[in-house]
Image (cartoon, rainbow, N blue to C red; front, side):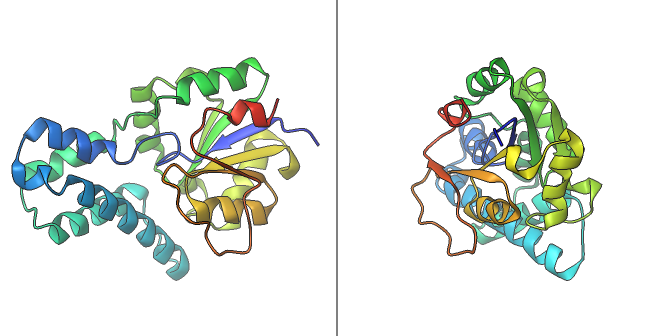
Length: 226
């Protein structure tokens, strides 16, 4: 079957999750944070992901905003940062994460080619709406799907089931794109054609599924479905 539907993970795939800490470091000009912002960003993202996995395993679901706050609190403490104003600013910026530079043009090309486009994310609906509106992507996305509709985080298969239900397509008609190797692997095992956006040149995860495509950014996604 030909690909008819292109679905994207949100955080780290369309939106730069390091953006909040980077922008805050530029704004605040505090040497203590400027020196550690990159570490904070990395730890924040890692803990955010780890907490989603652990909550999925234990069945102790909460929304992604709570997980995001918990991950940030761990990251700030690990780097010796205790300023409440800094925490508040970082959380505010997370609702306005910048899209990667190639995202809008890439989505325009997909729409011009007749593709259905959407997001499938762990993010809460209000968080995703904030990011999409801030980045100006609402006009090039047909749907924004949140795991809150099924009450469990990726990579549970019930999350990937949402795509077929929302778009009325078969698994074989979906190209699923993620910057998370584990997400691309799980989606491959589920039955999607997948593209892993490996911006940092990381090794491939040792998991049962393997992405069909490995890219350094999103620019060539339309070429995969042309």
